[in-house]
Image 1 (cartoon, rainbow, N blue to C red):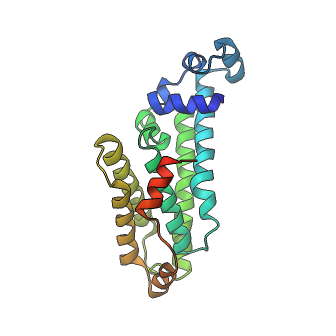
Image 2: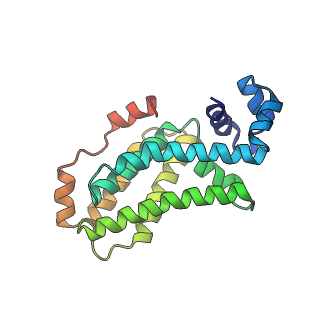
Length: 212
C-alpha cells in the first residue's frame, strides 16, 4: 500500500515531488513512522523507483520471455512496451519523466534510474542480437540503430499521447515498428511473423483500461 501510494504521488508530481510528508498525507500514516521506515526522502525515492522497475519487468519483460527467440520475442518486447506506455498516458512513465528531472543532477537517484534503464536497454539489445543470430533480421542489421529507433517510437508515443493528447498514438508506434520489421527481416523472419498474431488496436485499448 505504501509503495503503491508512492507510485501514485510520483506519477502526479514527479520523483522530486515525492516526500515523506506527502506520502504520510496520502496514506494517512504518521510522518514519523514513514521516516523511520525509509530513513530519508532519497531512500523513499529509490524504493519507489525500484517498485516501478519491478512492475515494468513483470508486465513487459517477463511475459516476452515466453516467446521464442528471434523476432517473436523482439515483437513481444516492443508490443508490451507500447501497452505499458499506453496505460501510463495519464500517470506518466517514471523512466521518461525521471530522465527529464535528473538528466543533469548527479546522485544516487540518477544513478539508480540510469541503471534500471540500462537493464531494459540491454534486454532489448539482446533480443535484437538473438533475432539476427536466428536468421530473422538481416545479418548486417545495426543493433544500436534498432535500439535507437525503438526508443524513438516510444518517446514519440509518450509525447504525442501525454502532451499533445493526440488519438491513435499506440497504433502509430506499432505501425512504425512494423515498418522496421518489413525493412529489416529476412524471408525466414517474415515466415515466422506470419504465424504470429500481432498486437491490435482492440487489445491495446483493453490493456489501457485494465493495466497490471
